Length: 253
Image 1 (cartoon, rainbow, N blue to C red):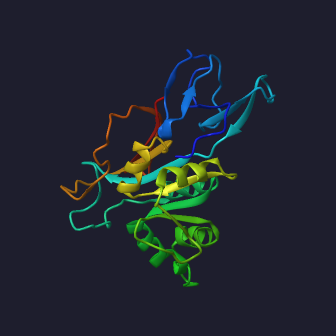
Image 2: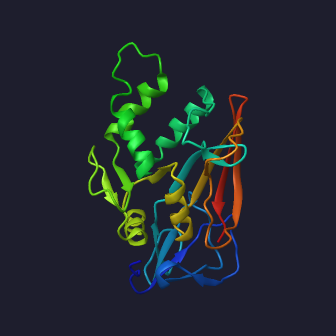
């Protein structure tokens, strides 16, 4: 990962106004120090430049980084696809659709792994083509999908349709660069491998897992084996349509 300029300190958001100062390792050898006083701001990672003024404080310039939100559907027994790759089991109702559409208001980049991208690129470009369709989700999401910048994580794909950017040769550096860029947050949909890689790199910020009322008995697991234990904090839970539960976690510092 490319190192940050001299004088930059990286700070994770916290839930309390005052926390003890401590140092910890950061991917790529970058060190981060947590200041004694820091308020939470949109749950994003923040950078502070020492010696420069910032609004509401002195001695640091605040640079807010974009979050990566992981949005994924899972069975009760922890699988995101069936034994043969089946994905015909999600129980989706109007409340869940409404929440999903609400997330889109806070993101301006869509991220996919190769497998999920192939599915998305085959369906969403023309999902609303039928003028008589009654699928309100297709009517609202298809135009959004077409106009929103997209990123595909793949080491084998050289280019992608719909002006999607392909990354993966140097995942840590490329994703860190995305997060440092301007704009709203980034939405990663599905893709256990990409989520596992970004978790290991410390680059995944917000986990939103929707549990559906089905036991698949096998298939692709929600979480691949991480390199290390990862502590999470539950920040939100919701029930949709009296059938699904969304658990939202943020990574602990």
